[in-house]
Image (cartoon, rainbow, N blue to C red; front, side):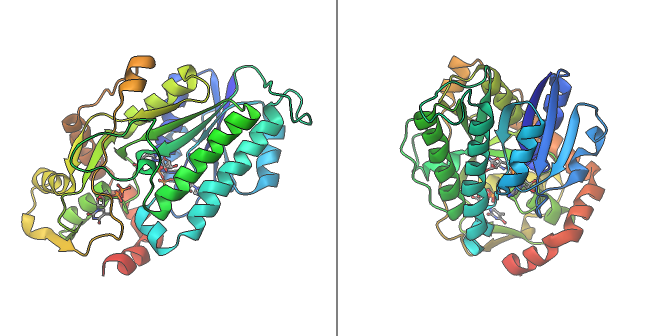
Length: 349
Ligand code: NAD
Ligand code: TYD
């Protein structure tokens, strides 16, 4: 039995990943470490909470003593680090927690993995690690910055992050890279495009617009709505992470994306149409400061070297996602009853 430490497994992508892995690999044990910030929700995991191969530990990745204790008590083979502050608009309001969680939290995990995985942890020249271990850092395409009308992000591009969120993720990528170069810690970094799918917190574009549409509330489109994002279904992202865990070459970075570039306004119009509402709900609002114009992922490396391919077309994935939010109104209501309403008031009203 292999033990995987998943951090941030109560969030959107992490919870989808935990469920996918338990289903796909009955011989894996998953330890989910999550601080349960506003974005962490154990309701995302109710179907598997009693699975004998699953354990939840409420902990902050910045808490070195607690992370050490978890490594000491478990024979961890892989770390998959999803835990992060993940929303650009919040990073503009309050950058500091993005730096402490996304950068320093990652460093605590790296240090602890190094200490418990290294054959001789007290010898700084020792470069030998336990067989098969790996630290996988879940990063984002936003670290590359913004594109103009043409071109795509490739793994060799320099990092040019524009928001406090993307700058914190880029910093974490560089620390992960440094632990690989200096200490030979086995690592991979994945950089995925925008995800959509079930259990996404409704501060993000798609669930926010679905919720507002359903409730006939204004649909706040930033600027001219012509910013482009490259969308991927969350289960395709999770499968890609599994492929990189199994087959990724040591120290390599892999972009993950499904070639689905859409302007924000196209997404909003699609949701309005699917939910049978009027375009009168659209309200153009002041643009986000430093708003990246376009993201597009070149996925050649992961598709050709590791054989990963997305399973969903954008149309299938979006239809299924909209259905999920309609069928899971209670999930949305529970999320909205928490911290969300004061956030929404502050940002939009
Ligand atoms: P999310 O905000 O839904 O979930 C983040 C999770 O991390 C939450 O469960 C939260 O409680 C937990 N967390 C936050 N701070 C923590 C801390 N200090 N210690 C322990 N747990 C903590 O985010 P998401 O959208 O699921 O994104 C997950 C990861 O994937 C992030 O690292 C993000 O940068 C990356 N990513 C996201 C997208 C996307 O489109 N959402 C795309 C590419 C990469
Ligand atoms: P978001 O889901 O926040 O992801 P990211 O900023 O990480 O790409 O936003 C996706 C796009 O939608 C982005 O260009 C900003 C835009 N957007 C709006 O126009 N209105 C909104 O209310 C939100 C949340 C986002």
